[in-house]
Image 1 (cartoon, rainbow, N blue to C red):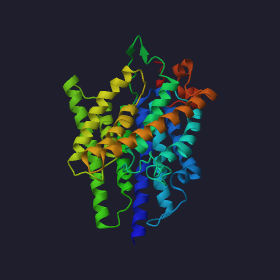
Image 2 (image 1 turned 180 degrees about the horizontal axis):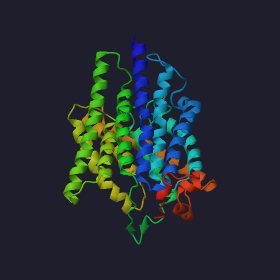
Image 3 (image 1 turned 30 degrees about the horizontal axis):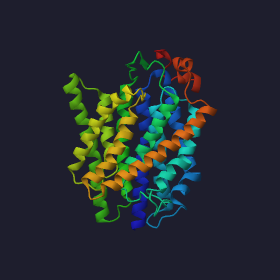
Image 4 (image 1 turned 90 degrees about the horizontal axis):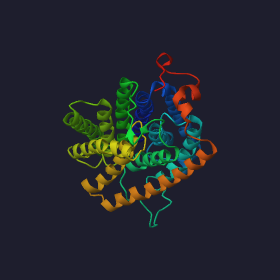
Length: 386
């Protein structure tokens, strides 16, 4: 009976995580200009399909070895892990929106999903090729991937921005040029789909619900996940209002997402109050780091560096601060994954960019990626060459 219950639970969690596919797509589609929306949707579609196939054919075996599970159907266990893989590349693709071309990103998606991300999983959740070495980070507690998923995607994004550069006209005469979002309702829809998906993301990572103890842990994990998102949104809203007497819905939603990323490492460990602090700090970090990355001229249209990279690090370290897990084990895991994910991604992106330039040229960006990449526009009657 436990086998059946846990199989059903894992399949349900898988479905919730897949809600994050349209979540990322709608969030990004709303934050970019209308002339780039179709390209963003195409990118998200290709990431889900290609990343999932690459993980099926190669990535899962790199991470875990052979298919197998004693506690549930091996196919359910695989599907749950497969649901994670595309999110790593989604984090990156959103941050290089409005200048990244689809085909080069497909090649990077294959390598990330078949090799880079599976190797990170291998040394954290998987078969652990670093066991008993000085680099062994298996003692790090990262329930659902503050570091394994979110920071890995964030480091890849940082490497990509450094290599391919910024959007045309983003920085002029040392000043940031505001490029407004095109569709706020889509941003809100995408953020809330991601929020819903997070319940499967974190709750499903407990691994079992077929006993009273495990059922309580799953419920606590989902509750803490939601609480951190609430706290992140509320704190950013307060900061907005105190600073500007206005409420920026895109920042408030990113504050919620920052809180959700931050709690992802340890949602199963905390009491019901600690996530309020962790999520609130996550929201503050979003507010602090969005302008910092702009000052560094790192152009990130969706705020993914602040939400996923910064809060992935914070959430992992928070486990060492607010639980019995040793802080140094958490810090070591953050550092090892950072070095590998950034260096590996940088090398791969650099090579791909030399062979097949990732960024569209100025003329292509002026025209819009919808036309040059997809041959169709999402909003042809509203096309603008801003």
